[in-house]
Image 1 (cartoon, rainbow over the protein chains, first blue to last red):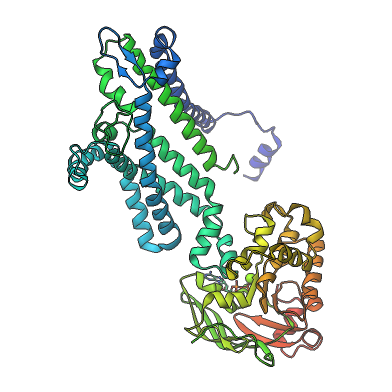
Image 2 (cartoon, each protein chain N blue to C red):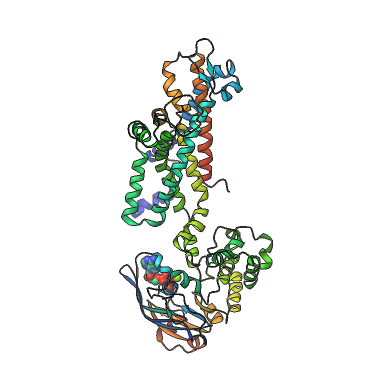
Length: 310
Length: 263
Ligand SMILES: Nc1ncnc2c1ncn2[C@@H]1O[C@H](COP(=O)(O)OP(=O)(O)O)[C@@H](O)[C@H]1O
Ligand SMILES: [Mg+2]
């Protein structure tokens, strides 16, 4: 035996030998690589598809001014169809704005409680609950808007219809709150404990530690959470379709029905002839939504990662 | 009962910190055993001992910062300037106001240098805006940092070098006017030059404050303190004038430690 091993030692090592493990490693690398870039490929593919479908409208019938500044969305008018999305933008913006007014205090409060006060089992339970809430399908929220909020608003405010900005804003706010809570809590958790300790040792009370130290230190992450909520609001379709009242309208009060950009696409796309100006106009709305949500999410992501400061 | 620690006694007490049978547990693990210590007012006392012997634990129970951990239990008393800080009527904020702490790793807040200095001051002096500039200047001058940072008071405290950060952490305690400063290995994150600079600063503060400083570095203890405490496994082994402790230790364990037989 000793002689055998010594002769082996003496022989030249075959450093270029490739055994099975080497091949498996290469194959796995390739698979992971394609899985990794597939997300990017899909996004680019979708964008190209939407752009091509909407392109005709953009170049032929599209007048920038009319599209963005006209409040009249009358695509089925036979003589003179109008494609103005101003009222739709106003609908989406008003609902999203109200949703943030509802969601920010809820999610910030919940995040502060979970991150800074709750301990042990309570904390774990709450985190799971928040995750569960985030997973409620939007049609369920829409249903709540239709069948619970609607009569409630009619009763409380003595208005004829309860499907309006108020209804959709509250529904959307409750919908966005869990994911915002989750991200805000991550942001609070990312604040190093020695900051809290330093503030506390200087005589800060618990609230002072949170308001003067933790929140300012976490402000980027918190802003990111809000932006993701806004992105969610812009992109949400089903719940706003069901709760807004779906009437083209620039809202003058909380009790006016509105119509959202997303809901318009969802409701009308099935009834348009492929390639018609109406069809293409809907895809142009799609491009607009895509760009807006992409920008919002990108900004949120950059802020959360702290790549951008301030 | 007014729980504010009374500092305006006619004659200042002989001992700044006085503990009786202090025992401390982290959960079920006992970290301090019957600690009886009397730390003289207005002096620098150093606390030495091998890693894990309970130095930080003792220090952190003097300003009750240990209580941040929900699972700490304490028996016994700690008097600071003749007031039992574990009395139920005592307000934590007042304790922290009297007892400043410098941590092992410099921990300036991620706000401007100026706001760092004023952080404690603003907590305890609501509404007074007038002399803030003066406060910032005098605190920074006391820690010998003023000339270096006077042109960038709006920069973040966290952007300074470690040595400067630690000096800033000392400076921000001063406007609160504490009477006791606790320092937990304040130089261990610094290079030799920074160590020398911060040590010199601590020496400058002598007399104005009672300073209890934990150190791993025996040369530092010997250089920088008047009295010295040696701890081992949660117990106080010896407490003497620094010179005596190093030259003629009374206990065998102390002798072993200062001759480097523990690590
Ligand atoms: N937060 C904590 N939880 C549990 N045990 C701790 C904690 N902090 C310190 N200890 C334990 O208490 C003992 C004393 O620690 P410490 O006071 O940090 O020692 P030193 O500062 O002298 O190095 C050690 O055995 C350590 O493991
Ligand atoms: Mg320690």
